[in-house]
Image (cartoon, rainbow, N blue to C red; front, side):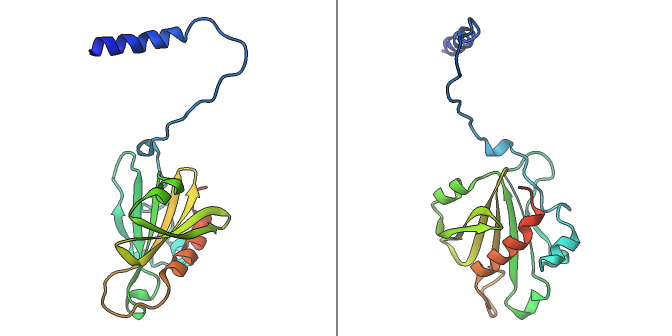
Length: 182
């Protein structure tokens, strides 16, 4: 069976190597493979401490969620506490997701509730929540690699929860966007 399949593939390849034909080529289809795209790494120094402080995040509180030490990864995710937020407003965390997945793929994700479309400093984006985490909020925006997502959520259910996480995520997304690749 394998020989038959290989022979058919080989014949198809060779058939395309004969005469050239005048005219334009037909449309081509590119298959996008998220697992082969090298994504921006926000976890290993790509965002300086100065940049993090300028957007209101405490560099000393960095927590790496997903960042394989070598090779390609479809996700690189880290999070920080806002400056001065450890006790005052409910222990928020701000996560930056760098991914090869796209906004269109996010729109199709069954576990998300899409709250609306948005723009982040001119980039197309969307606002969403995980169905199992209605207190957290994501602002996702377009990038050549796929997209970036900024999530604001709470560390625990204890203590006060002050502020709208979607508004906060939108603010952090707008502040971080100029420091991220297009």
